[in-house]
Image 1 (cartoon, rainbow, N blue to C red):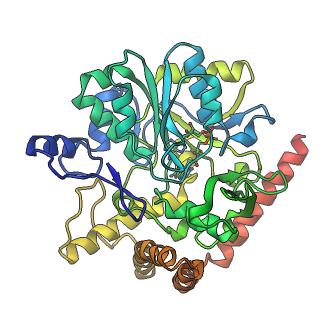
Image 2 (image 1 turned 120 degrees about the vertical axis):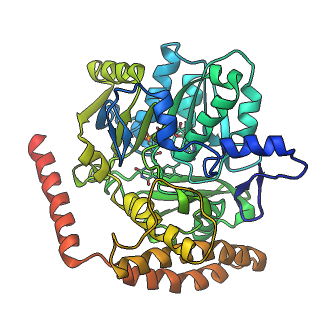
Length: 433
Ligand SMILES: Cc1cc2nc3c(=O)[nH]c(=O)nc-3n(C[C@H](O)[C@H](O)[C@H](O)COP(=O)(O)OP(=O)(O)OC[C@H]3O[C@@H](n4cnc5c(N)ncnc54)[C@H](O)[C@@H]3O)c2cc1C
């Protein structure tokens, strides 16, 4: 896997034999030769486990967070991911964790943590590309057991690797999924850092999810550190150009073909519980779906010891935590597939049928604009880097964003309803206290 100049990992097929290409296609999460999420889930989970077409197979469904308010600011959301990983280590279920953290040659990449301190030192969401190719080679055959953490396509791919390679299969004991809206190129971190005053070649490190006790959990900030001066700069993410996830700047093209929101092949999947009731709490709240008895047991122990607090959710509430994701990955995907078919472009076979009949013509327009905005953002940022001038990117992307924004303006009634819901839960919280 090589990182392209635009900051995206791509398989380099130079000198690769036909036999190896065939293996590559069987492990690639977006190739027709690889099994889809339903096929993998049918192989790895108990047949009796219930299934929902929106969220995949499920055992337990929860919303919650770790209870230690001194620890939680170090996590992106409710901190359940890192807590669960440390419990797997402490219970001797695993010897290490393959996950994403600060790396040597990149801002972030896949690394191996072997202690609770290392796991806790590599918290937070990294909206940055990462490949586990080298990391899996590094651990292969060392006789140790691991949990691997990844966005849905990474987990599906790790399952495919395990199906091809019995050594890796024996070592990867737990597959921990992270809910994903879409993955970003390296330009996402760089463009934000540049906007707060740290140029790409001066960028030492970033924090994508800084919490603010005065705000809601959605109103997190971005921070960047300069290599030269060591200075730390911050801004609220939503105030930055491209800070709204719906605009999909620097989204990878593969994400246009993803229909897996809840990492359907993972033993457990964890995301943000974007429901008004939880969103108002600055600490962050996870949505969690379990598909593994040991994970269920660990969560039950956590509730018992009061290390974590969990509400039980139903399938509808779980799906509601990812409204935008469903619009992009199910409704939007059907439109993109139909557009590809109409234009004679290849696309991978998906679980979603191509078509337009499920959405209004206005919605079709929005889906197309988002795809175009996201595709153009890569070149615009590359031109800005070439010219060493941030405005080259900002001046080019702003009109596209404002045009898109115009189309997607939430109806007044919907805005009012969402605000009323948040106010209700704030009041309810005060009474509880
Ligand atoms: C690219 C991306 C897009 C996301 N989109 C959504 C979304 O649309 N909706 C939603 O609800 N949630 C989304 N999330 C998940 C969310 O941001 C939190 O990561 C999740 O809620 C877990 O929070 P936590 O507090 O439990 O994790 P923490 O305790 O902060 O731990 C995070 C763990 O995830 C690992 N990690 C971080 N980044 C990556 C990565 N890129 N690949 C693999 N492992 C990683 C870390 O190493 C750490 O172990 C996304 C995450 C990523 C990385």
